[in-house]
Length: 513
Ligand code: MLC
Image (cartoon, rainbow, N blue to C red; front, side):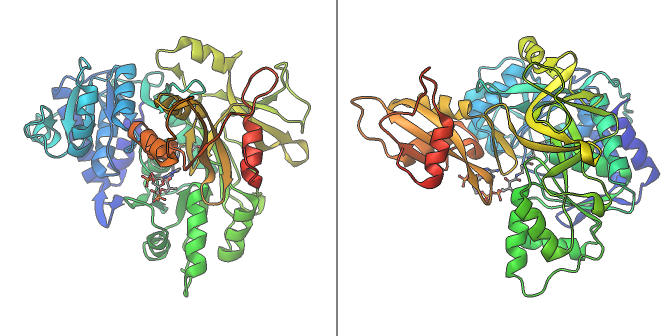
């Protein structure tokens, strides 16, 4: 069981059909598969083999996909990195994972070179430039790759295919090790649940470095032998035009994307003709009741909401029959996925009661890379603890509703942010005594990151913009506070713990802190 092999078999059945139309340029399944093979030959010649980690930090482009499937074809492990990660973040991911190869572009390498110089055993390949930078050019390597190479697909079901870093409560990111079986079982479950066929055309606007855009959208579509119309970046106007003009049947977005699509819809004089569309799917963050209904009133489509996590892939989904989709519910467990809802004592709660959602199945990852303690903490008796609070509706066949989170986590525009990571960066600023980072409700992003900061005694007043700029030097933009409030002290409870709820309540109704 090797994901890349399965996809290569689909390619062999559909050689002349467009697999991906990237910004208007089609790439057929045959051409796609030949490129993957050429990239695999290059990796093999570079000495990359089973179990090696290949970190890829690139903007959205076809080369990312060729590399990913080539990596899986030679038994290596893909480590996709957010294109916005800062040098220090990249350095951490490379060193923590022990990656032997880092593929990026000249611009990112120029920025990260200082931070990663001290790492041993990492070779860098650049998609452009390369001259004089000390790194090799990917295209030079490709043209020198041996002809006649045949993929051996040495990795099997229980071998790692990807390591996806997720933020953690302690502020230190953890690499979720995802196997071929995890990927394949989840892809097959979605294939059936969403009745995916070769006739589908997916409009793809999400980043490729996350589970949503890569594993759900791209793997699923390439397995079904359907076509992906891929946009480099999400733009609501272009998206509506493409949905009509490119014969699209499927769309996937995070709620922020749907929010922007609605804003654009309401501005337009002529609405797009969506007769070809089959289903709009949302995930990665909770879809509000009001957006679900607003979208349905405008377009006639009920958004299909589904639930997933990096560690588990997709867990639950609403049904493909629109009549069985409900607002605020993430639907039913996918085939092969078991869900239970546990109370504080670890026992199942009574049907309909709220508890922590726990998950078991072939979709569940193997553990966190190099962190056996963290891995052990996240499982109880073989069940993965999602950290999400929810209930199963006994009156509706066990339909799952999510109502909150046990862990401190902010989801902004479909990206996860753990406050601790941002607080650590703020606290490292010379003028900061302590900080508290919270998520405030936000119409566009779902939640937005804000920080409340206490200055060190005797330090000169520091403008909030300086602290935002400080964060942006060290952290990807989505983790940085949109606003910083300087306060004399933080609200605490009798135990001395910061009362984050109090901060959220006060910011919501505008009370001074
Ligand atoms: C961008 N910015 C964000 C942000 N996205 N800030 C907070 N949260 C976000 N999500 C910042 C930019 O860096 C920029 O900052 C500023 O906001 C303006 O950018 P923008 O032009 O408004 O943003 P845009 O690039 O258009 O992106 C919006 C978006 C994007 C919604 C299209 O956020 C996105 O693609 N989100 C999808 C994330 C995703 O794929 N998640 C899946 C995780 S997998 P500055 O300061 O630089 O100007 C997962 C499992 C599962 O969760 O179940 O799916």
